Image 1 (cartoon, rainbow, N blue to C red):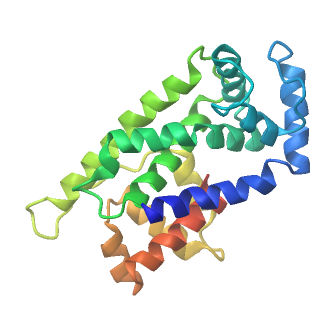
Image 2 (cartoon, rainbow, N blue to C red):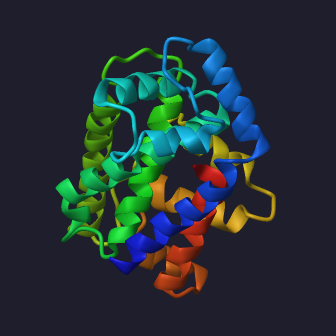
Length: 232
């Protein structure tokens, strides 16, 4: 699971900075003003919020649920969205584990984890502004369904018996697609194009690596860094 650790390590390292930056403190102040009903005493920024939501934090189960519910309501704010994603990472890993990280379908477990993180991020965008009493369980349940559907598409492509013909994956009008399109024509067009091919055209990592004349392992690391920086 070394590659999985790499993905999670990149997210943790990035969060160590963004969780305590000025933007994080401003978003925290806004969160506290909009939700005076939740207990945020003693906290100064979103990094503190994420720490308080950890299992070893001082908040009880009901208090943690109320904070996550508020984070989802305000997830239209980029900093709060990122805090919610960081909070949900243990649950995202658990969902991947339940689906065995796509064993038998996906060669590299970190690829499944990367997709799961991206899908969870999209869910938070789709559901931002909603009030859900059981926000965390609802997010993980929906993620499990989306990730299972992605794995089934990957399986149908991998084991198709129709030569070079492949099942076309419909392009959904999603935040991910919009973000990839916005990166075209810039310095990251290559990685945006490869990510598009992986997610929306159903191409395998080996196939896109061959087209890119790259080693699959090297390309996978590039895609992970790209996703952490621009797509999550």
